[in-house]
Length: 443
Ligand SMILES: *Cc1c(COP(=O)(O)O)cnc(C)c1O
Image (cartoon, rainbow, N blue to C red; front, top):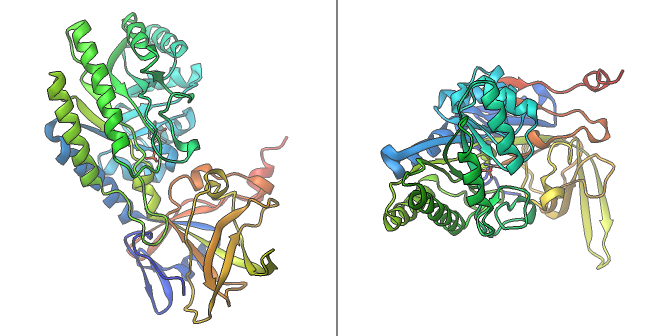
């Protein structure tokens, strides 16, 4: 039997009498009540992870600690924004839409950071008018736009510059963001970063408080964060040398890796930030600058492990491969429209049977979705009990980040609901989309 692996599931998940329990509720009951496919988010687990990152930043940097900005793009809705606020974290948004969710949740705008490599004038205007704490600038045109709009609105806007430190983050190319050939940021090596600093300083309506880098996602090798920090501190030192004043803030982004497969281990917040703090403090001492207020932007590391997707099996099929071996295809009622990561990034997931114990022998299985696309794969290769069939509930853990947030309506399939579970009670926090919702867009 595919084994339940506590390191991949949310903290309050367990198997009892062959049934998966999440947050004190039985997965089969949750599926029966709310339907599948379904995202089930363990609320207490979310709180614990949010607090763990906040606590880890504070213990690593003490009174110099900045803000933990929860990366909204990993998954945001009004209820989650309220959990983020309750735990005392900020939010990093990268579009007017994500900003609108934070606003609708009543989130303190001074704790919001706005990202994006092509923010529209409307997005910039609404961010400044709403009092968004920090705008992270990503191009020369944007420096001009934010500068002029802030001036028009009679405000002085706090800004960071996004810097490309030139670090290979050792992750999938599509989620690696800090080598030179990317759309994000101002290159340190080319001199663009320094030029951007000078441009920002020409605007009385911009308050350059610090610099930012985000080197990629699903990173396990802490060396990447440390190299980026070292390079950015070099830029802070140059700033001090040139202008005789220090930039007070440094935002080192997100990207902390989590476990998706049995046996893997999520990065530990305390140890990764303690290691980072050692490097930051040593580099600042060497450059004779004060340690800036360090902020971070974890998304996946907070929400990823909190959520399990429940699917219902619809059909199975055995296919004989060229080498004569057989592959069992197990089709579920969702797929690439609720989890694009396997086709986008070759991401791996695991799954267990949530509704019963099986003693059947395991067979070589591929779990696929219901979309008209060969690449619509949930799990490329897994050993699964041979008696898995129609009506079984499969649970895929660690789908909280970049699952629902990247969901699409491909094949006019409606996006799943998100149900929060706490102390055995479930609550819909994002309702399931209906076909009527989709048809209502058409005139
Ligand atoms: C995506 C992103 C994050 C969050 O990345 P995770 O891997 O989810 O931690 C943080 N900051 C920026 C700028 C990002 O683009």
